Length: 69
Image (cartoon, rainbow, N blue to C red; front, side):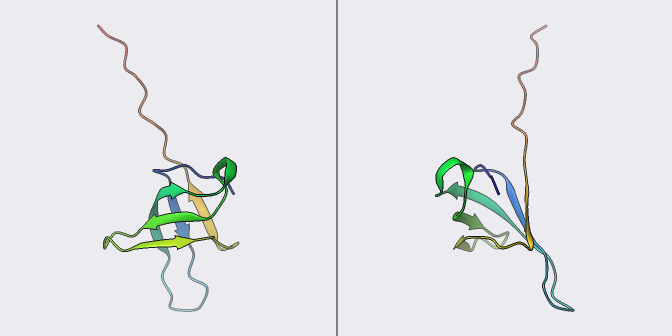
């Protein structure tokens, strides 16, 4: 698993009735984009986590420079 600050981490619910959770990766503490990650949830809560196999990194592309006209 490789991530960068600004990417999102999608954690699938592991039991019936448990919803998926999404958090922004605000800091990568492992080498080469590896976990652990510091996450920020939509409610502002921050958490340090090494995600398991039920998690997926959603890469956010950096905005590309627009050509000047």
